[in-house]
Length: 181
Image 1: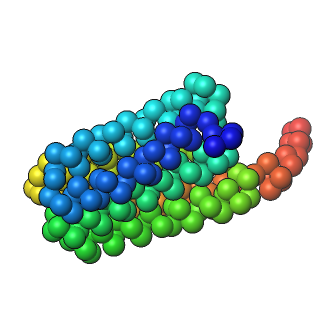
Image 2: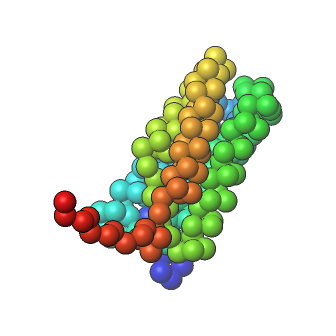
């Protein structure tokens, strides 16, 4: 594809890896699913590094990366719900803040504003990756999954509050000089 950066190609590869990962989970091929997941996780780490170090940060990449992450985890957790590793109720709770964050990212992209991941989002993403990996190893990792769900809600609330209360320079009233006493 013309204009495709290496970072965006890595993000696209991660999106494509969702399908064989889900198929492996649904087929009970846990080792294959885990390997595919680790490769997808590596592309997630690499695409950000390549984008920043290689000066390949693009608006498309800023939109594509979080959307692919959300789609990948929703697909993986959906497959894990189908095979009984997580309850459908848990999948719904995980999906709710994901959809909210995706809509928020689309709104910011439409306004041509940057959506930069901050520490609550990075912590929630790390906990989600840990939960996914551990659930591929054992159904007993459900408590880590619940922690990831909680982390996603906290991150979602953080971003909602941050984006709705942060004033842009145009909205900040000019400072008036204080009167000498």
